Image (tube, rainbow, N blue to C red; front, side, top):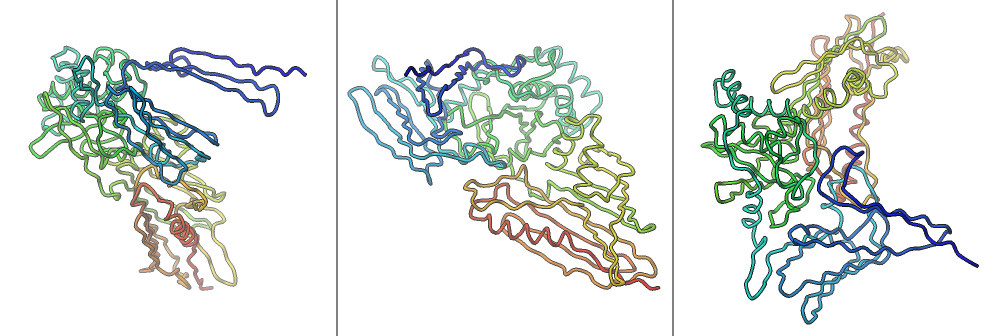
Length: 531
């Protein structure tokens, strides 16, 4: 019996996305067609890399179950290589080191390696087993040549890829306009940041030397888009043109587990700009369109940053703000009218919460922004109707004002009137599957505060208010309170997300927290009414 052969096709070339944006990576895509169930095929590929500095991280897992796997490093004796191991605990991975005549051989054997594709994860380097290759140097003809033997070696090499400052007419025109409209140093720095955010679109494509060399300034100003290297370099030129001590910086976002610096190109995935002052560095990131001066982006807080310093490199740590800096504050007044609730609500956003909502409203939604806000506020309620939505944008705050009507939300039984006061209208926290073996990650730390004032009618009296409750864990907490004074019931709720990551060991605490939070959010006040 003749079996049909496995059919495959191959396409190799430049990396591209829909034929539009590119970087200097090359890729080969293999597509297999298996005629019969149970057919198998073996694919062998050879990749030649002529500079070991570009061999950075290698993951020991895949999207599919690896029943048995083997990864072998054969390191020539004249090559000084260090291999760092991450996230091996909990996986069946063995390591063997042997020596040949001219090389050192490191073999990793894998058995039953599989990571489910969960949502809301901290990032691959936090959870997947991987190794980082550090190319320190090599010996040739009896002479040792350094590559990345230390952090300083790597960052000084990176700094040589950056253009040196020189006055340019396009930059001079921008600086003249800023100087004309700004008086203080703070105003000038803010104007430089906001000009770059407004006029240059951030697109995370890579081009040239693995994306490590910034695109020329004149090219960015002509095309009006750039990656993080291009934007930080442009901002550097503008700030230098204004007379400040500007620096370009390499940093890793919290998407990477590599919190400590080591001399591998994988240890940094972002570039920003800094200004040296008498009290330290001010960090500016133009890739986030709605960040403010002196407000480090959430994903950079607490991270170690490498800063160019003439012919040297200095290191600093970006300050970590209190989670309450990322606040959503809701203030609502609720009155009764013919069996309906008339709701006037103001929502204030700042920090990461402001950046998130403004990005959604102004970048992604366009003409649909009011529709999005209505669905966001309305939640799953079929009884809530929006009368008007308006936006108010200031330098450090963003707020949304809404007028709403709640129909059929009052419930009468046995002469009692039941009224829900929770202003989230259908939003509830979700539990985490305790069988999940990967930590859970939020987009950012934050605090949400809700204050609702409900106005009683003259013939209405409190029959029952829910009990004030507080629950606090290390990474999250809440407070609920109800009180009545001068015919006004004030309902307060505070939700604290104090840490970015919920560890596996804390899933049960989180689920207990969620159950109590959702129950209290569903509580109603109970009123008596005089005839």
